[in-house]
Image 1 (cartoon, rainbow, N blue to C red):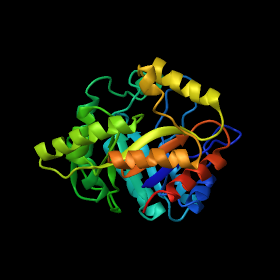
Image 2 (image 1 turned 45 degrees about the horizontal axis):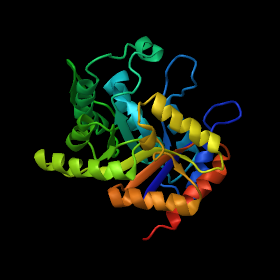
Image 3 (image 1 turned 60 degrees about the vertical axis):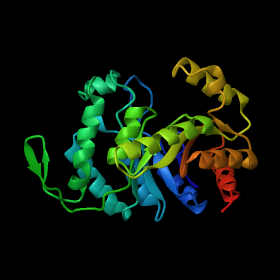
Length: 292
């Protein structure tokens, strides 16, 4: 089971790339960053720059986007950023991509993000992104572009819980990233993912679950997170209560094992609540106790 988590915030409220070395020392497989800029005063940071900082602070750990909103960005620009990050990091990028979760937000409108056709735009992007990164002559719109120096194409994981996202993962990706999903729901979705792969005559993508964990003794944080799932995401309360990962190493190991049994090969958890460093240790201890 691969594990990853996001960086903590400094006292000034910005991501701390230097703490990526803490994760590397604990044996984490990847450090991840969300792509979350709303533009209404909610703190948000450029994912590419955060990962560049993490690359400079580490030597081995993978740099995972969870997930990059492709419809907001010109593909030639994304490709040259990824080429650069691959060269700077020694080819450690894991590229999670998605259609973007906040269309119509102030930031989305300010950068002329499309309010419709996000799936179609993402499909178009994924069809050209690999060849751009490889440095091959590639048609982008009406222009042929060749980017250099070429870099290895990172593993591409497509985010989203919908069937459209699953199809996109089968067609274009190496993996599928459902988020905020229980092991029971994941097991059902994994069956459908296999069916889609057979329909499209493609390999079954690897599954990497994205979620949230509260591994400190903080009942108020758990209650607050569940309330958000119900009020913002429209999730039934009984289902929402099963989503956050909580408890000590034994309980966390049980959840990781359940995800593995449901078909997941990796789990990325954002750590909510206090004492980030201790929570990272709990998650590492839990993974270490899983059967080999």
